[in-house]
Length: 319
Image (cartoon, rainbow, N blue to C red; front, top):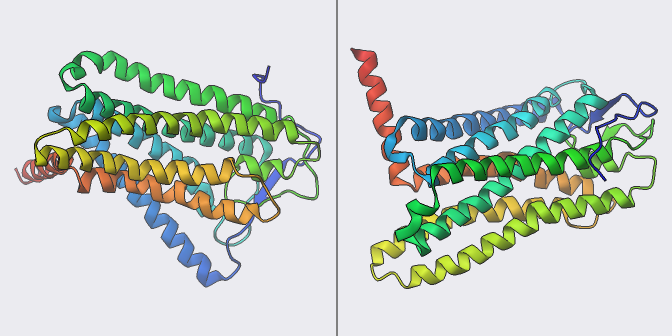
């Protein structure tokens, strides 16, 4: 059984430091401003989606419930990573304790896994809406939607807890405390271990298959049925709207699953660390930012709800 309480090994180092992006002060300032700007855009964009869905009854449908849940997960997901990243861009590197590293890994994996499961749930929602429109409200009840989101988070937490527990029972080399990353992710932390890690890498691959491959297969199967149903829609406008909604979701899916698979499913080599950092920047900043951009700029309902909310707010402030 892998499900043990996370025992942090006390024989290794008590602190880690992260590898810096650059030692040039001018570049450090530029990176700090860039990361801060992206983080603020992610917070504002995803908060706007949650606000729009919660404040407008027209958006209280399963699709927008899942979208607002995804936005909440992505706000939490980036918040686990970015503030610590920003604190280490400037000046001397700030150490993180072994317990702190374990906590960040647990929350990062849990929220990342929940993100992947939610994308699969959203694909199922589109499948039911397009392939079984007459039974949509009977199938996608409020109770089922809540249960699906809770199960997604619970399953992600269960897998992440087992993987994190297993990793932090390893002894870590005292002289190699630098993590070749900007967060406590599994592959770079495993590279610091002073013991055989073949079992741990196997468990990582198994968890990655459950979190990435299985949901991606389900999404692909859903979209095969969706594409077939869309082609049978007689109205050109109906086909256009269906393709628009589905292409938005597919864009996020391909970026999220694609770059995560490159990090967690490919064999690790000596230069994997630098590539992993670059790939991690994509699913830390780009996909959480794409979520509000794609679903607001290409969605008339969300744009209309936000516009009405802003107008109502402005009107109430002037009175």
